[in-house]
Length: 279
Image (cartoon, rainbow, N blue to C red; front, side, top):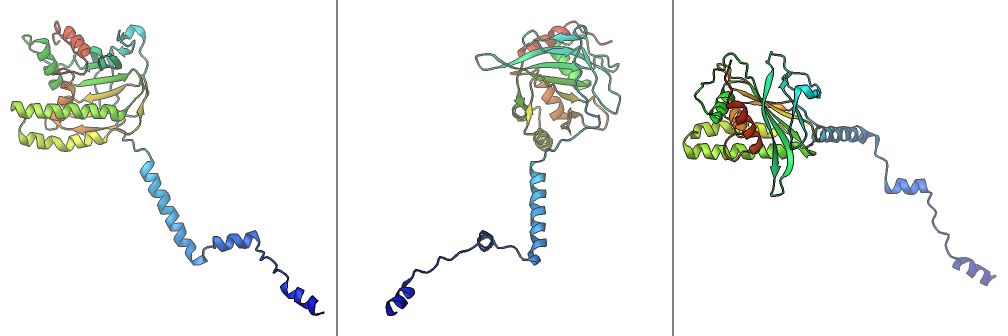
């Protein structure tokens, strides 16, 4: 009997059994009812912050966004270097009446010693503007500058392969910075003028989203005609606009002065304007 009692005392203890539900409750206790409103508030705030951070922000202009119509062969000119078609005339979608703009010239943009074709560029202008009185004694290069400074224009960029808006944005900013430095060195731009250009240049940089620009999708930069009492606007379709005489005109003139992005474009425009006389 003594042995039996001793064995019963030395018997190993039964393992502690905890149900899975209790184990989960032990590791992850349920919040008290009084904390539920606070948790809901935090979850809502985090969701809203995430949406505002990552949601796309597109600035739409006055005109409704419309797809670019494909020009017919008889109404277009093909860039021989890229086979990209440019309509002979375009209309800028707007709530105000903007006359049709005529294709003045086009050309390809190449990079590196391999001459990789990155995009084709078309230059449009309101050549039928009755107020555009181009002096007959101007050279073709001077006619380009006169037209850019005195009437509505469009620079149309059509990538030959998918690229990004930020890639084009960086090219625009480098061009403006270079022209800013050159203007100050040559004395054509005062320090006050350079300071006034800083804010619209920052705004221009902020217009472009961090998203792709797909192959053969045109990007139009519209330079508004001069209007008394108002600075000229440079409008990027579906992205936004800046208003500043120097920034707006100099970005367009960048395609025709100095180390131009496309020598082929400049040559094409010069050939067109050699015999051009305003009506």
